[in-house]
Length: 173
Image 1: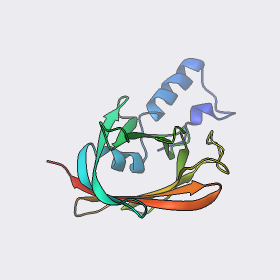
Image 2 (image 1 turned 120 degrees about the vertical axis):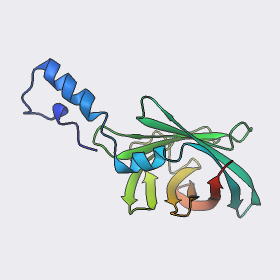
Image 3 (image 1 turned 45 degrees about the vertical axis):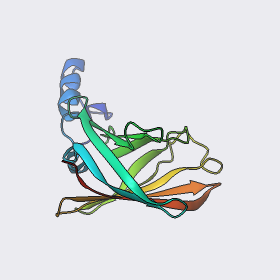
């Protein structure tokens, strides 16, 4: 995505022109958000966590807000449901806010992207006490050319890396 130049100092526009440029820029989405949007639908497979073993899992993706955001639901419709909302920030970089069943909302920022892999880390502007709260600290999404989707979540507890959770998924029927 292109940075929103209408917000930069020294950029000469009338307010109406700046508003029109900003609205147009908001519709230019990052390639990484486009990849997430392509996941729309239901995904099924398994999840693994060392303390819990392997169990069935489902994940859904819904494109919303005129294509500017994607709502991901882990374990949809269950007591363990968690939601992550992906969108581009005003600089055009993909971010994700994870609404966790730990009752916190870590904000993750895309750090690396290399085709099939999107790697997110906790953003410094997350409104959590990362040194005290258990939270999602890292997320790697791998979107395979074979139609597979893998999530690797790394949680932190008391400021240190803790348990990993893996999801291995294929598109549902």
